[in-house]
Image: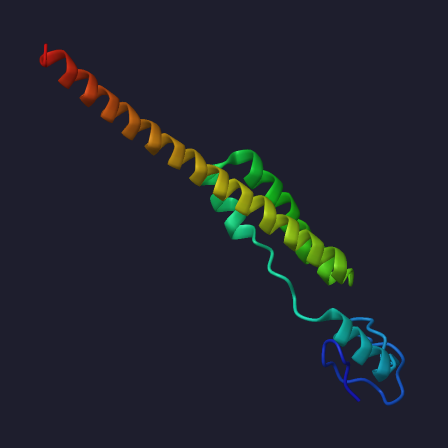
Length: 129
């Protein structure tokens, strides 16, 4: 008999692994249910949060990093819904930071274009007198 967790060889009929302490008597039906409830691991969006913090908007990025850091710990402890919720929050805050910075750059470009066109119009009207 081998351990389900670490693969160590165990005496036949052992309840716990002598190497890692893993319970060897877990019901396979319960394991299937846990695997089905678990689903796929959600993304942490940690890289996106870090990039938003560095290049875009620090407050939104920091909130995204905090939520992204919680995803793996909640997932590994079996709290799958909370992990998915933190993943969604990390994505939301990171995208809010990204879009707010894009909106700020768009407003900046529009103001520059408006200022240049106003200055051009103003200069032409002075010379026409």
